[in-house]
Image 1: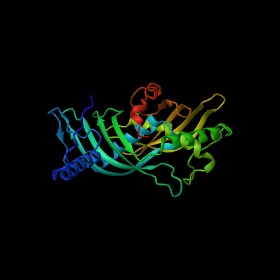
Image 2: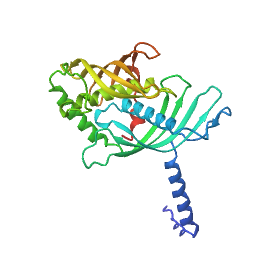
Image 3: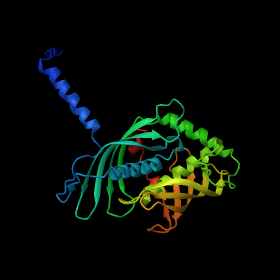
Image 4: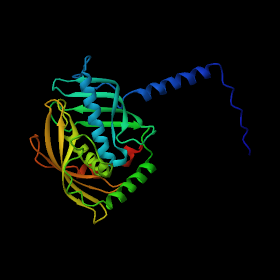
Length: 286
């Protein structure tokens, strides 16, 4: 027996209004920082006068974490500008920062649309390092293009002569020779893990210089790279030497071990477990 289908009623005058309200609601949601709801614990108070330095520090910590988790020298991102942010503090002097910021591709091609946008929540545990990060980004390089660029970079690295005679990158004039750019980008990638893990609410780091190469092996499938860098700590203006050992292969989890002089925390730490735990669904927007 065939059922009779009744025609749908024509939309009434309220339909355009409902559509407009829905559109506005979606716009508001998209503009909000990741996890921007106020902490449920009543012990938290909003910091009405959050320093701009704290917002920038939280954004950089989120990007260090992101660069390491993505594990791609072709997709490195740096901070462009913080657009908005809020912060809450509690009696333990912990700080939760929700923010929206724009990014730039670290080494953009000429004429390339290089801006992206991220929303993040960064949780600082007083003066303890390794802030917890939840970050979502848009307008990044397409995954297929990133994989292609990474593989081309990998093939180029396999053909490089051993760079054990490298004295410093950049040189004393701040110049990076184009032939050494792949080595610098890979060093920046490995250093991202160290800078994220060592960041606290009151200290932040930036890669100042690659000061030496101890190992460069390309005999196996992966790039096996051991090197020394100088990390610039902003608040003290101190230059901190760190020895870093990474193993990288395109589309595989990045593995990092390091030892830094003059920093609190264990003498040696590893990014191996963190890298092995990367969940593709968390990075689906790349």
